[in-house]
Amino acid sequence: MGDLRPDNGGLPPDDGKAHGLPDLPPEWGTIVIPDDPAELADEADALRRELRGSARRTRLRQALGLSPGQPSALGIPVVIMTVAILTTLVSLLVVTWGNAPTGSDPAATGTHANPPAATAPAPDLKTPFNDLAFTTSAGDRVRVGDIVPTVFLLVDGCACGPLVSSVSGAVPPGVRVVPVTTGAPAQAGTDPTNVLRLVDSAGTLRARFPANTAPDGSATAIVVSKTGTIVAAIPHVTSVADIKPLNPG
Image 1: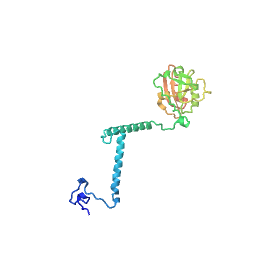
Image 2 (image 1 turned 180 degrees about the vertical axis):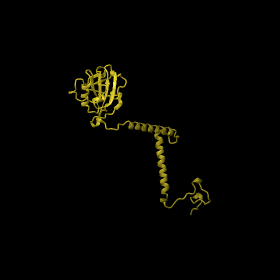
Image 3 (image 1 turned 135 degrees about the vertical axis):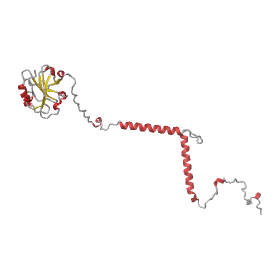
Image 4 (image 1 turned 135 degrees about the horizontal axis):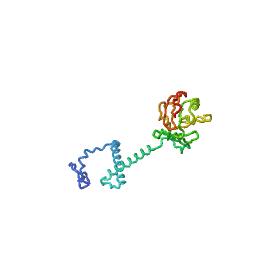
């Protein structure tokens, strides 16, 4: 039989020393190998997660042109650029959303938006009275100074047909009776020859003589002499007896 000396293939003497093998690092602690490998499942899962995370970091560094061992000097600039791009996109979205039309598009629906309602002209409070001009039912312009002496009757909201007739029969010859409305005048086919109906669409006369601006079923009479002087302005006229003087002079 051969002997079991160390140089003859036998077991080395158990003298507490590792013959030919390095010692394990002390920070590893005590290494325990379980009998059942399933007991290492948690450690194996943790190791696989760490390896996958390391692989992702490696791919990201390669996409940024960094070698695996190179410090990530581009990290902060990349974050700054990303934030700037996102901020710009959000700003564009807000501006675009704020400028979007709230109603339907007439071109898309095949309909046409209603045009804005025309606003009435402002009353003329600066032009000299004789230079004011109003229109007839035919659209002709008539200057006040060309039709004096005159008794103007502001008849908006007033059923003043009988009043107009009575005043036209009571004034002296040569004096015109001028019913004035802000809308379309009444039919003038049966008016006497000394009656001239005019339209004051801006309401200039009511603005200049505001004693009864709100129509209340009566008229306002403005008596103007042949020189263009305003002789009287009489509110709440319901009959010819309320107008004094009837001869403006």
